[in-house]
Length: 89
Image 1 (spheres, one colour):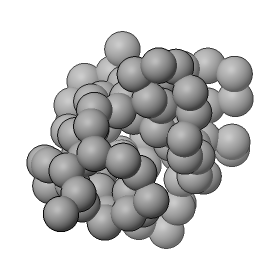
Image 2 (cartoon, helix red, strand yellow):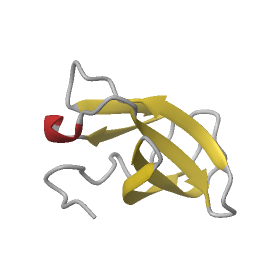
Image 3 (cartoon, helix red, strand yellow):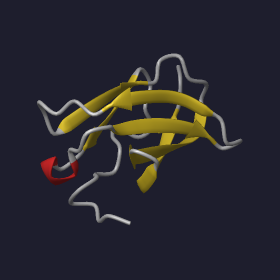
Image 4 (cartoon, one colour):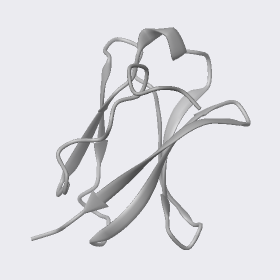
């Protein structure tokens, strides 16, 4: 996988309405996207990378509290994974 200089740990942790992750421009590729997956293996969120900025903002306000996997994908390839913890008020 990649190292944390290319794909930061998501913050804040725990997240409520939004979670941020920093993605290095070196991995900006056509079709690169972020996906949130539940622990049961269900994709609950997907978003194309915003190539205009390094910090990517994902909406987590509709997600139930709990742990998720944040996947960085390019085409059909899974490039890296981070854990996201959502704690709603």
